[in-house]
Image (cartoon, rainbow, N blue to C red; front, side):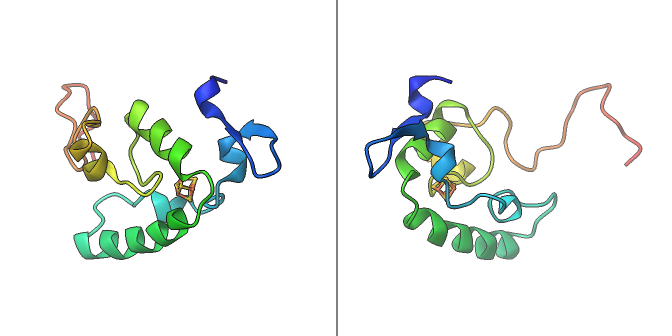
Length: 106
Ligand code: SF4
């Protein structure tokens, strides 16, 4: 665990910031399904953002997602927000693989 993953809580304890995450067990709220419609994504992300706004580890969460080029909503930011902040994900969201060995039977 790197020092960037540690966080000092209100009582002064140093903990992994993920232990204090308010979004535990709510993966579907922070990572959308394949082919999610824009309106559904906006509704889902609005709910997730309300949780992020009151989360005690928003800053380390946001820093983690930016430095690891994560997908999904982290620390109140989605991929587009991180892109505008200069932390672009490796592959754009919604772009199909162009690899020749990609499964084409779907
Ligand atoms: S800031 Fe948001 S995404 Fe990050 S741990 Fe808190 S609730 Fe989860």
